[in-house]
Length: 214
Image (cartoon, rainbow, N blue to C red; front, side, top):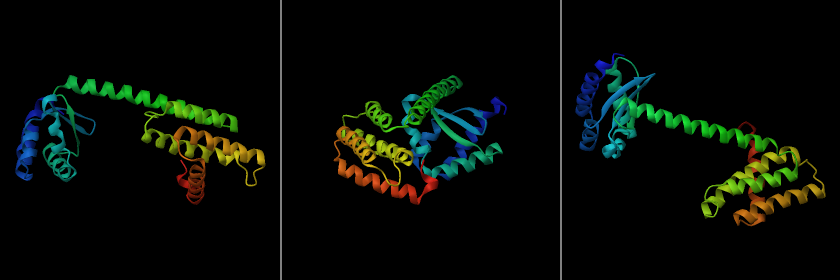
């Protein structure tokens, strides 16, 4: 698309949207926007940092369909509309770089966790993983952090039991399972019998929903 045509197209979109959306808050927000670029199938528009709180008026679910339809009419193609903080192409490029860095960090974290989980091949390695998991849990000193740890730990334990816990477990296996439950209980401050009950429920759900185990 010709960059020189973008400002005029967006001005026409804004005027048409003001006719179609009966909301003064939306009018004030959309009037403050600046068109930045069209990239792939996305129209990037921006608000300066001082007015970025107005973006919520543009992104309301009830309004988005009208915005998308109007943009499609004016631009002659279906485009997603994204509102960013900033009004220049440099602001958009900087945002993409930040998002790319975050994506790389998330991928690295996912890879690390997958590698750790793949090493859970014995009860001892499972116990060690449950200990590391608690240390890595954000806000683990707060009640919600403990709850998140317990939830993820139970899912990990249920998956490990697929290979570590046979249909007719011996006494050593039962004690190993109890040791893991006690580790989760000590960290989360949730009684071990309660965790055992939730584990049984989780395993029953996984057995009834084999396609949704992950």
